[in-house]
Image 1 (cartoon, one colour):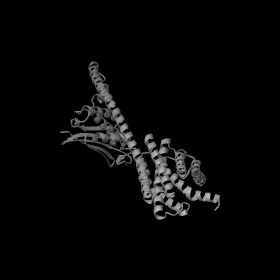
Image 2 (cartoon, one colour):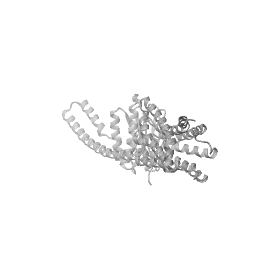
Image 3 (cartoon, one colour):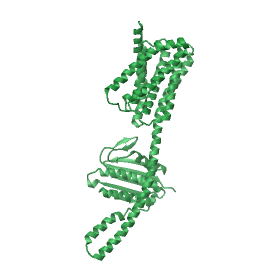
Image 4 (cartoon, one colour):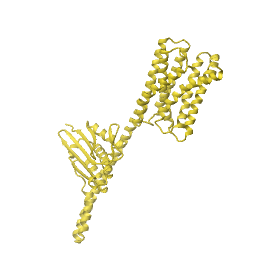
Length: 448
């Protein structure tokens, strides 16, 4: 076989399958993001894969043998490590060329893809060593078995990691510092993998040590994939917690503003009512006009009254909002049942529940179904809160909770805030939708 034919054969049987599995693994994670427009981008990616495969073959057939002659056997390992490190770095701009992904998300996709490919390659190396240790890497059976082993790892890897990231909407949650740590882990893994194979080929590594190191490689690959998911999940939880804290702080300020505003309006309306009555008695005319004006003032003057000041504020505020939207809000509330709750928590819980209900009712065209019912009662040592409203549209489940873009309309952080409030007091909250009726049901134990 001539030099050119040998080079082409090595590209086809050794380098191309190896780098193809790397790019496929990275592509699985990049599939979490949309493709950039333009078929030329995919063509460039395919050409890059072929070019790197050719460069790898040239590197291993020309550069590495010369390095070994000049610097000794360990030059082969050093050159291989350097080459794969350069390929890893080069994959980042390639990922950004083809997919609409940020720099740090591209780093995540490349490190995670490298980890998955390394896991598959280590499994293949281990099986090949145990089953056919004398099988040369240039044999087509070797290439076919490598592709098969990669498929057997990539399919469960996609289902267990990539699909879960997509289902949990964790794209874009990578943290720079932790991603750099993972990048370091991948580099260490490349060093370990290359060193093990070089020592094995030199005959300087006992069989037992080789098996232990290959098992360690498998463990590192699986652990890296697990950490990839956990990093994204932990970052999302931290972001959600920060957003929820910010929302609750905003709700606290909104509660104080609403309380002061409603008190000022009630005082002013009370004064105006007395002035209207005095004016009506003095003029003795325009009684119908005066009654209409008095009724208008009553809308703002007769806020919802329970035995809980915070509950009064939020119910009055939402009652005025419902009146403006021609939604009927009915309320039967024993405010004393919530005396153990902080004002902020009451405002947050009822505010989020009523905001969802108002949005749902506002989408209904039938006036008789534009209704919201709120009840608060004491049952033994439990406070029972229920908010009911009609809705239109389809509901779906998101992360175990009912969700919708219409109707019941559970909104991410608002729903999480409600659940946090309920759990803070050792209670529970459920969301139920059936026959066009949506219900929020909260149970809170009353301290003895």
